[in-house]
Image (cartoon, rainbow, N blue to C red; front, side, top):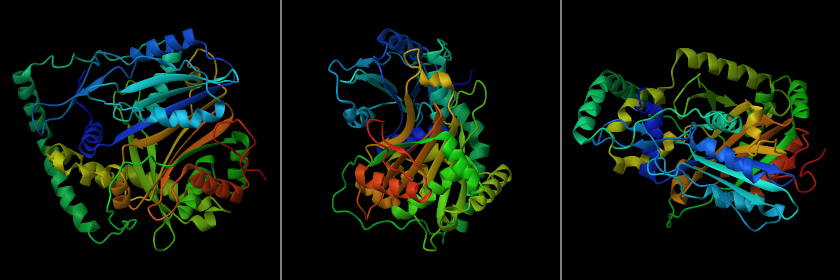
Length: 447
């Protein structure tokens, strides 16, 4: 099997490495009873032999495409010995998400369990976005829970030898020349057509550029209630998700001058036996958040039009990818905007119904499950350059819709509690009752 990285995956890795940022996907489970540690160890062993069992090897050519290789040493299971109060689970999840992952040197992922003082337990798995997207990670988890080992037999690291690697990577670059030429023409066209375009205005430059932990929040809504509310508003569950995102964008100042919200929706393109880490495409469209509160038909029509358009008009940014290996790494921080789709004010990803085995890390169903996507080691300077950040990820499990939110407002208050207040206000507008955070108290929003 060809082990050359897909251009999207190659770009993800190069941008992260140059900018010093790590994009992380975190899966989170809560058990209302003690976790079966032996079952969790089996799950961990299957993960070590599954879809996550690989890492990235750079080309000896500065402009050569990178390749997948076998991972070598695999990460160990972390078992916290001292039980913690359930209320500390969110703080522990934040600590877990800050663990340094490295898709090149390893570890590319990490599994841990935290026992609760009330007899329950929480489980966290973090994985580098360079290894997988959310749908691919759920497939890896479902395989591991079912006892399936589906790892591709990737070549060993440095198995080619320097001269063979130089020859093969040079030939690969020659094969890429036609695409590079087309990308250069597309780049000129893209710059010409977008020279006057305006996105979110960058905030004033900062005197101090420092790393920041982005505000995050996760909430749960009964799936039947979510669908009923969407139907009452003339839309679908996905349309309601976009509407919530648009209304939230108003509160964190992610709107254009005319009050509209530009949305980038990630669309899954993963096929059977797909070895890409990020098998997605992005679809852009604009939402007016005002009518979205009472009528989802506009969002439904806009989404359908955008999907139809994307089938005939490929994303211009995607056509530029063959140029990325040619760009010096020292320019990497300037790529952050393109990598995070800064032209769109809101990122939305709805992975839909999650395969039930994904919810069984110890062999039995967890009581609660959610996924979130985070960017570790981002700095205030990067976020001000982007004009802020708002990203939402949603899915369904155990009869609930979960939505995880990451946000940053350069001119506003940035804390988990402030973000939770914004979310509660939006859900109240839609008359949706929810549980904010991991259930250990009363719902944060009620009709």
